Structures are given as C-alpha cells and as structure tokens.
Image 1 (cartoon, one colour):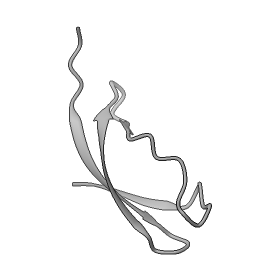
Image 2 (spheres, helix red, strand yellow):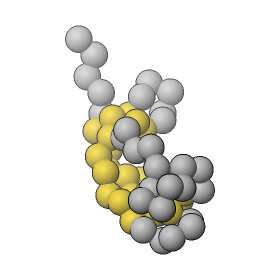
Image 3 (cartoon, rainbow, N blue to C red):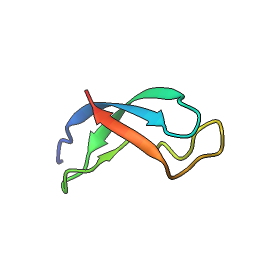
Image 4 (cartoon, rainbow, N blue to C red):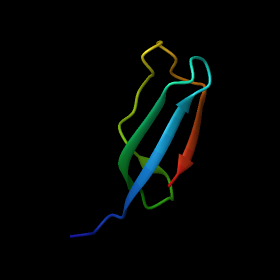
Length: 52
C-alpha cells in the first residue's frame, strides 16, 4: 500500500474574494487533489491556490 502525503491548501476566488482552506492529498506528479470544484459564486476557473 502506497502512502500519500497530506497537504493544507488555501484557495481564494479571484471573482468574489471568498477563501477556502482545505486539506488534500499530494498526487505522485506533485499536484494536490482536494476535490474542490467551484466557488459559491459559480466560478470554476479563476482561483489563487497557495500551499500552507
């Protein structure tokens, strides 16, 4: 069984400014998967993502 590294991510919507703090799993390619799909304002493309 392969262990995946957990990471904390802050996602900020560039449209309305809403912030979300989520935990996700780091994929083998370096990407972090949180399951986040879209903001409350229906924005699904324009975000600022920072790893904590």
